[in-house]
Image (tube, rainbow, N blue to C red; front, side):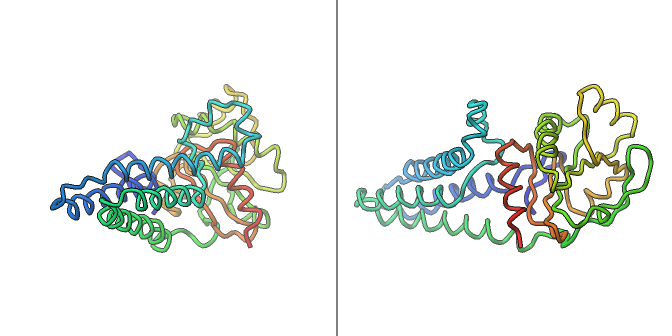
Length: 270
């Protein structure tokens, strides 16, 4: 499970876990500090904000050659571009500084941080263990734009990026040029674009109207791939290594940088 589904809305799990950590930490801080009338919530907010900013800054620096093409994209955190280790390190450093400097609130603050951190660790570790992802490439039969049956297993032997999309989906439309360019740059990787629930005529018309020359555009009229992989929202992008093992997935729009990060990880997967 990498998202919480509220009707047609899918909310990525990561931000919810962070928010839950803050709420748990604040609740513990309120409980532990009520007798002393000690409020540590502003300190917790500062720790969270610094951690997020550090995680984003580290990611941007790592992929600065990409972000410098359009610096405004640095502010678009919807692409999910964060590095956990620098973020956690910065948050821990600030928490340690607060614990040293704010002696009158130290005990309450440390209880709050411990509770919030425990919630974050559990929320980060448990979902991947429980996630019912397919161990291998989905087996559902798909159709090419000309009606020929296709199975993803026919493309085994190379790493594979599988994008589930629809023409009516705004983030799908926005990320399509990024995926197209990546397909051109990486001939050693299969990029597969599986349209969800639309006709061949509708897909061809959209691709032609937007000058999108893509290889491996397939149709999944019965949404079988989405059902098989648990992908209930779009865009969802699945990353398989050369052995056909699912190593990552992304719910939501990809930027050039976050796509490059996952391609690098896919290439180095054993």
